[in-house]
Image (cartoon, rainbow, N blue to C red):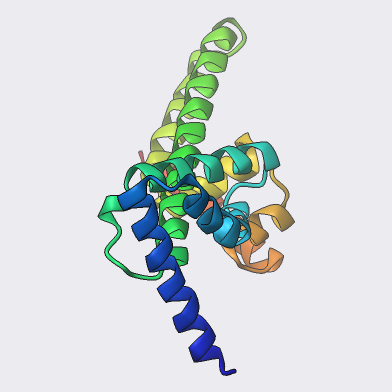
Length: 184
């Protein structure tokens, strides 16, 4: 049996399972779809979110979302469709975490008001403003490295680059931040 035949058989089976869910509210059919694609979705999300519990939550949310929006599925590859949903939820999760980190950072700065002088406060504000001017990818690398204390290896795995490339990118980002702060 060739690979194309197996893929077509699986695709036709997915269509039948989705049809059974939509027409008959067949929970067993959706459970079959979940079992078929759970590992694929988990691996995809796991590349984005390192924490296993958070990853499981995102995967669960993805399948719930897919079930609710099953009538919007247009017959494309079901595995790709559910993986796209999961990756979008993971991105929202990461953005929410980033925002929480920013709030935490600002709260910590407020607590330290008595410790820092005005010059240091100005520097911190300039640094924060300069970080906001970075690309989204560079901002994420800075957050992972300096705020969430991820190692170079962990960041490299997340973005699919070598540790050396990550080290060079962090060096270039820091250099860029220094230039932005000095010119203001």
